[in-house]
Image (tube, rainbow, N blue to C red; front, side, top):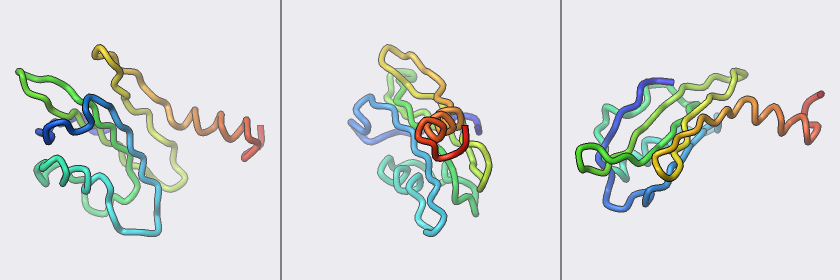
Length: 116
């Protein structure tokens, strides 16, 4: 995962809710992360690198120097590669790591989507 960066959100954006976005759609050119950045009026320097179509992003509201900001952690994905582990912010400043690859494998095993 790339280092976290912050940007000034619009008032009330996410209202203290952390969000994880995993974009695995390969048949379109839109970029939901760029749309989120646009809503936050974030600088273009936060956009994912050119050609990055598969990615995961964690958005976590934080309070820095008396200002509300959004901590953004990004991870580039690849076809056939593992899903990332991303931070999910909880109330009280707690953060847990969500291991999406392990979770996906467990769901597949339990639903028999892949061999056990």
